[in-house]
Image (cartoon, rainbow, N blue to C red; front, side, top):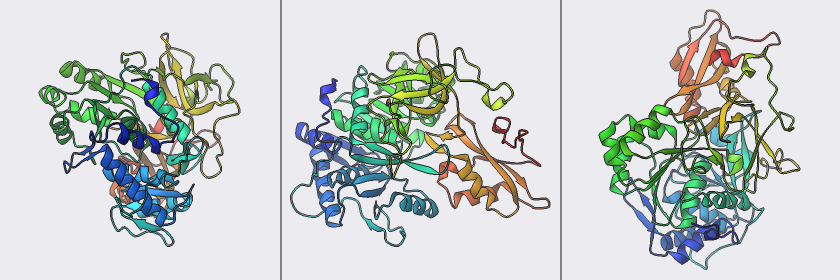
Length: 501
C-alpha cells in the first residue's frame, strides 16, 4: 500500500467519498452483534443523509457535536456526517455517567448530541438519533487542512480531562505515516475493532485507516474473549487492532482455542499499555504469529512508534518512530540530554539500559493544542514534550520506563489521580485519599485507591467504589481500595506515590 492511496485534498470526510467511489459494493462494515452489513456506497449515503439532518438542526462550520455512540456503524455514519456538515466531532463514552457528561458538554460548548437512547441532557443541549435522514443534495462543506476535525478528550497532567484539538491535517498525516510501514493494512483485510471508536486509537488506526484503504471493518460493541474469538473465526478476520487486555483474555482460553479462533489472522497489533511477555509468548506458541506493540498519544493522532517498523517484536520495547515522525529524549526544559534524576527522591529513580529522558515528538501528525484556544501545543520548532520517560536501547528502539507525571493508563484511557481523589474525598468519613496506578495483566494498569478514614469512621471498600461509580467513567473507578492510618509524604509534603504503588 502506498502513500498515494490516502487522499488529503478533501479532509477526513473525503476518505469515505473516495472509498465509496472506488469500491461502492465492497463490504465496509460488519457488526458482530447483529450481523448487519453496510457497503461503502451505503455508508456514504447514510453519512450524507445524516449530514443533511445536522445542517437542518443548525450545525455550522466549526460547531462541536458530541457523538455518544458505541463501536458500531452508527458511530461511523455520525462521524463522517458531522465532518461533512462542517462540524467538529466530539466523541464521548456512551457509558459516561451524567455528572461527567455534563462537565464535558459544558467544557466543549456542544449544543447537540448524537445518541441512541433518550438519556436526559442538560438544558440547552439537544439530542439527535443516529442514522437520521433529511432529503436533499449531498452535503460536503469541504473543511480540511488546519481546520479542526475532532476534539478528543484526554486527562491532562494538571487537571481534569482536556480537549485535544485534532485537525484534518494531523489525522490524515498519521494515516500516511502508518501507510508507509510495510503491509500494515491492505484492501482485502478484515479488521477487528472491539476497542471503543470514541477513543482515538479505535478512531484513527481502526476506522479511518480501514476507510483509507478500503478494508472491511468488523465492529464489536464489547469484548468478551470467547465470543470475540468466535467472531474472528466466523467473519474471517485477518487483522486485529487491540489492547493487552484482549490478548490476555485470548491467551487464557488455551492453546487449542487460540489456534482455532485465530486461524485466519495474519497480523495483530497492541497499544495503549505494555503487553505481558507471557501473553506474547503464549500467542506465538499457539499460532506462530507475533503481536506487534506500539506507543502513541491522543496529541499525536495517535501512533508514534511501533515494532512493525522493524518487523520484529521486542518484549519491553514499543519500537521505532513511524516514517515522518521525529523522536528525541530531552530534559524537562526541552534541551537535549539525559533527564536529571534526584537521588533523594525515589519517585525520580529509573533503571534502564541507556540514558533516560522525556519523550519529545515532532511530525505533521501533532495536535493543534487544547480546546478552546489551542494552548500548550507544539513549541515554536514543532516539538511536543509528552511527559513520558523512556530510553533508547542499542538498536535505537524506544523503551518506556515511567511517566514524569502521575497519569494512570487503563486500556489506553488516561486517568488523572486528582480527579478520582476529589470524588473520594467528598465521601463522609474520608480524611485523605491517594490514587495510583498498579500493574494489571488485563488492562496494563488499574486504579488503586488508598484511603485514610477519619478517626472513628466506618468505611468499606464498596462505599468508595460506589461513590466513584456514580460520578466517574468505569475505567476511572478504583479496582482495589486499601485503608491506611496515614499516607507517605516527603519532608516538603509531597505525596510519595511510588511507595503506594
